[in-house]
Image: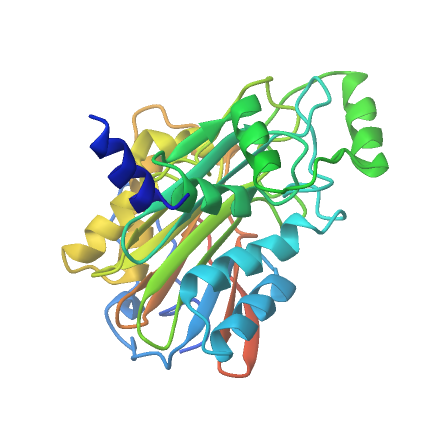
Amino acid sequence: MKRRHFLKNTSLIGVGIGLGSSLVNCAESPKGKSTSAASTENQTKTKLPFVIATWNVPNATAKAMEVLQANGNALDAVEQGCMIEEANAEGQSVGKGGLPDRDGNVTLDACIMDKHGNCGSVVYLQNITHAVSVARKVMEDTPHVMLAGKGAEQFAISKGFKSENLLTEASKKAWEEWKVKSEYKPIINIENHDTIGMLAIDEKGDISGACTTSGLAYKMGGRVGDSPIIGSGLFVDNEVGACVATGLGEEVVKTVGSFLVVELMRQGKSPQEACEEAIRRIVTKPNSNYKDFQVGYIALNKKGDTGSYAIHKGFTMTKFQEDTNTNMQAEHYVKS
């Protein structure tokens, strides 16, 4: 049942290719202002449609662009693009094959948001590969925004999703090796992959976004990061732009990072400037231990400008525009 039908029924019963402007030479001390002149210069209107995603995921952006070039909409593009990585059992941080929590359970978080501001999310989902698609079903077929745990799994199965064991032999072996010492520590860059966040703007200029992850490797059972939290891991405002986050989710949640980036763009900042400011909010906190973790943002605005920024080097963004599928590395925030 579509959300609008559900609500109606219940009411009746009383109920330029690259990382936007240049990221090179943007790094500085955490207390200062950005030295990036490119944040306000050299931003040119981008030819539509296009798609951007966190990390080096050319197969995912290629699928999304295939949808867009076939006159598909941005929502379908980001869902189908993310599904590519969810089904990639060799990428150990999204969907099938994701590294488990410390108890050996692969648990998935995902969210999706459309041009109207509608959104759906799943947290602590097990045994279902395509968490992003379940999140879309939550958005479209329920009166809710978020479903969790067994409830999310039962809902997915009721919608025809296949239940399967997501723990591959490779991930199981890695988990068993980790158990020898059981030392937990956030990994700054995991296989250049981590969470996949994707933003697309279609030929009509409409924006949608999605985010999906298996979360931190060997996390405590029940832990949920920023990825399924609307406003933290992802935010879309079709009047302004969109942002998606990756990295240590706890730090993104503390600053409601993706909403912050979009709000800064609403106030007139470019996507690049907004991403830099969002990182600055993290690293300038009193007693911040930002050198020990990674956070990165990618963003686009309604004009088609893009931006990308992270605390540490190694963070990349993939952009597919016209016939070019490009991955570029962002400059880190603090030069060592």
